[in-house]
Amino acid sequence: MLQRYKELQDIIAILGMDELSPDDKQTVFRARKIQRFLSQPFSVAEVSPAPPANRWAWRTP
Image (tube, rainbow, N blue to C red; front, top):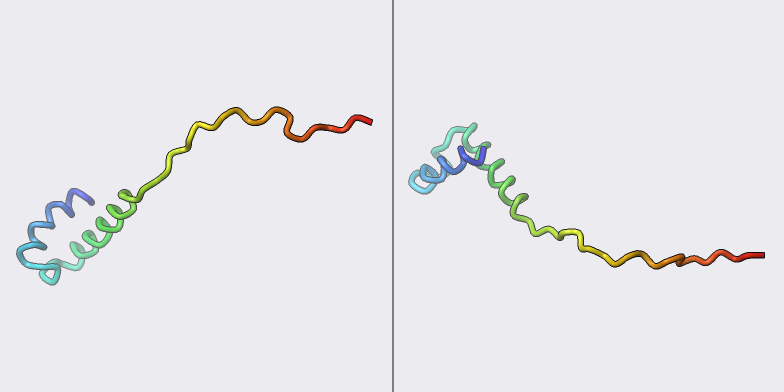
């Protein structure tokens, strides 16, 4: 889909979106949505220190 979108970009630049077929317009909208999704910043899990030892001490009677 992204490859087809790349092919359509030249047509869009020359003729505009109005000249595309309904199927090609749908491809363009979906490809743009995919590109926005894939270009989101995301955080990578950081390495955290070892968990504190016995954080909740058990009471002995």
